[in-house]
Amino acid sequence: MYGLGIVKGMAVTLKHMIETYLDDIRWIGRGGRYWNPDALEVRQNILGSRGAVTINYPEEKLPVPERFRFVPFLVTDDPPPGQSWGHDWCTSCGICAKVCPPQCIWIERGKQPNGRPKPEPEQFWIDIDICMNCGFCAEFCPFDAIKMDHDYELASYDRSAAHIHDKARLSKPLSYWREIAPRKAAAEAAAREMAEASKGKRRSKDDGADQPTLPEEHLQQLYYRGSGY
Ligand code: SF4
Ligand code: SF4
Image (cartoon, rainbow, N blue to C red; front, side, top):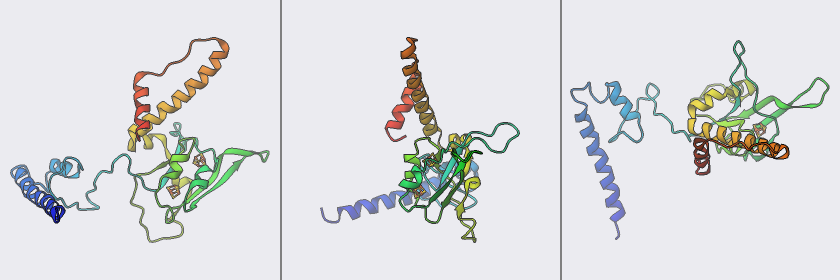
C-alpha cells in the first residue's frame, strides 16, 4: 500500500524514542544511564542497548565487531623473550600487492648474503590514504600474513610520513590478531593444522604409519571459516 513504508519507518523511530526514555527511567536510582559504568557497558553493546544513545567520542567508544576491517597490518610471531620483534609471516610473495585494487602496497624483498632472494620482506609499505579497506590483501594472502586491523584512529596532521605505513609500523604479533579476532584466528590455526596433518598423512602413507586426525572442535572451527569466519 502506498505510504505503508513511511508509516513503518515512523513506527521504528517512535519505538526508539520511547525506549530512550524508558531506559532513562530504568537506570534512575542506579547512578543514572549516563554515569553508571554498568549502564555505559550496556549502551556500548550494539545488541544490548535500547533506544537512542549518544556516544561521547573519544572518551567513550563503541566496541567494533570481529569482522570490522580498517587498514591492514602484518602478522609476526610473538617476540621471543628479550626481543622486540618476532619472525615475519610474510614471505614477500607479492600476491597482496598484485590483487590490491588501488595498488597501494609496495614490497621490497629481502636478500641473503649471497644476493639470492630471501622469503621475507626487507620493507613493506602501505599508503593508508589510498587503501580503501577492501580486505582483498588479507583474503588472498596464502600465508595468513596480512590482516585487517581494528585500529581506526589514524588521523594526523602529517600527510607524508604518518600516512605511509612502513614494515615497523605495520607489524603486529600474532597475539594481537588473536585478541581482536579470536574466532577467525582459531579457525585459521585449525586450517593450518589440518594442512600440516594432511602433509603428514601423505608422508606417512608412504611409510605405512597411522594417519593423524583432527580434534572435533577444530573441525567445527573450520566450519566457521566456511561460513564466513
Ligand atoms: S602479505 Fe601475504 S600475500 Fe602479501 S607478500 Fe606477504 S605473504 Fe605474500
Ligand atoms: S585493504 Fe584493499 S586497498 Fe587496502 S591494501 Fe588491502 S587490498 Fe589494498
